[in-house]
Image (cartoon, rainbow, N blue to C red; front, side, top):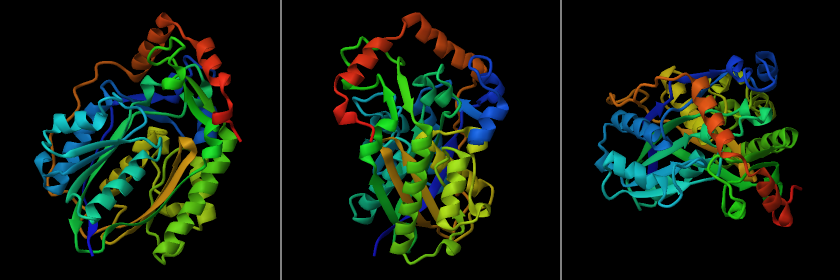
Length: 378
């Protein structure tokens, strides 16, 4: 039987760090308020486009696997903050890498995009459609953020990581997953102003309103990830006690703790990055995976569980059995260009640009409420 081993991994984190103290300079909050509710102390703000981060992370992943860009047959680009919609952003990454001839697709299931992308690539490799795939999780949330909304502005950050998977006869890689969606609850996490629904509102790029029902998201996230994890483990006859490490979506420390509790897994087995990167949407799981490898938390033949949820409300949980190799075959010297501004300066520039353009909030509200039924919050 053919499997798809994870043979390469790499990340790209923007250097500019936005602290809780920085946020307190323009919204009513403080470090204690943010940490007590989310576990977050810092997040990164990118000075470059998302595809630039994806390029750096991908080059590191390819070097780790001992491959060249031309060895890749497929690129799956997981993101909900794409640089472009048409053409897709995966094609931009293919071109920048020089991965001539590789198929390229975008996957947008919000925070689960990387894991849904991994499912897609894994299936295509295991069925023989391609032999090697690059799977990316990348977000540039800062450009889409409503920085005046304390409920969401404190949560999100930018970042990227990528992995390479290759055909193998060894039983390793993604062996089971559960995918799902609470479509009836999609209204509790929405970015209004982004999409054809708002085309007649004179909305310009970045003029967006976020709907974020924290208590309801918490309930659905914990329920979805816990149930999906139980179903996934049952498929491979693995008990929670046998899991070596959980690499979850880093949305909120309270959510992660609750999922671990209900899944029957000790927090000692959970890898956390939420405190230093915040919620990077689709990038949280791959970045945490790469850092777990860098820190020696993943051993040869380790059993990993990777649960996540996102807007939609999409949900999933993936079971991965690692191979023997836990160190890169090679390293890449590709890096982002230097950033000459602080994260706070970058954010204030985004805020100032929105203020100059003016917001079309009334138009956004009108488009949303004109036909509420298809988007009803249940």
